[in-house]
Length: 541
Image 1 (spheres, rainbow, N blue to C red):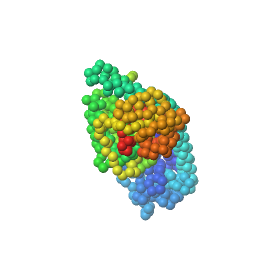
Image 2 (image 1 turned 45 degrees about the vertical axis):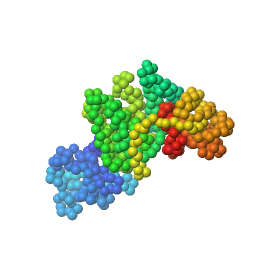
Image 3 (image 1 turned 90 degrees about the horizontal axis):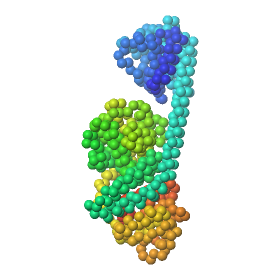
Image 4 (image 1 turned 180 degrees about the vertical axis):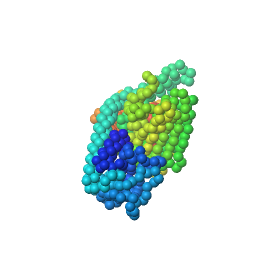
């Protein structure tokens, strides 16, 4: 509550109270919700000049206060015109305190609750009911002004949230609108380039060119995913995670990614509660924050990655309806870099905001972090000292499942098989490439351009049919409807869904339930091979 406009208002009201009552000193204290604690907020100028107490306290529990707490305990104004007279309610005053000859203390009510305790002292004449009325009316007016100001601030926050929501929705619609078509175009580019690379001898001059195509396709894929993550439309695969294991598993890649003049230190809290999260997305949060920290240290420095348990109070989540206060698991990434000024800090999660030189970055890294964290029900904020350091704090709610999952180490290249797979995909380039990948892996592949054709092919096929690999959204019959129809006659048929649409669109087709096998376009050859093998082997997809 100690912001400049509030301080000016209370200071003005205090000086007016002193003037109107003919007093020499005065004070204003705010009262907490259960009326057990007073927080001193404003003193009159004369009181400040006369007070010689070193570092006077600001917070006073009601049970320890003397006469000036009686207005709260008795819930009425209290006048003491002879302060020197013996009084069992007095608790004494500290050395250096302003001498008191007379004192008047009034409570200010908001409904049935006392919200302010205001007092004046050292009037030459005795205090009377006129003084009580003047002080009470003045403080009630100040409280109403504060309430109006708070209401205006709340309205401004709501307007800012509405503008942010509308901006988020616009970007989400943009990202969602291009994601499907863009991902369908990237799938054959990435897939065919991988197949070309795999087919070339180690010394072939086209290998660097094929790797260049793959790299460009992956960057384009990641850009779409960043936009979707910012807009909170990314498809998530949730499960219980140990944040320490995620950080440990990323360290080899981080040390390869970060410049040699940047050191990485970890401070991981033991026995950390699990969180519910998508491991790839949480890893992206850590990676983006570490890379951002590196960029803030052009001359080198130290990146510190820490984990701990934390308790988010209302102060942290103020104005954030989607985040609840309470116990959380916190990730902290700090640097010893150039820091940020207040204006940059307030805008740090905005999309396309970058302090890097031209072509030095997309400005999506931190907005991606913000989107991923919020999609996980978490909260992220930054603290920074210009010219010195910055810390990003990310809090996730703890998992309701009391187990932790260690990040698996990367395994060998996935193996194919000899089963029969029916592929239903309306995008010809994606379908042809997917079928070619699967045939290279040794599978027998049946190819259909839509759901109706898939039903006809399945009906004509006399041999076993082990897996349906189907696009979620196709003209006519969608993927789920196709699987429902086929599973009536082929009860052992397993399914793997694929799509380039956003999670919100896919979810409307009923295929994003827990445990539903799914692969998001664009996918690599190894990702497809691995996912298909897991589904066929009845492993978690």
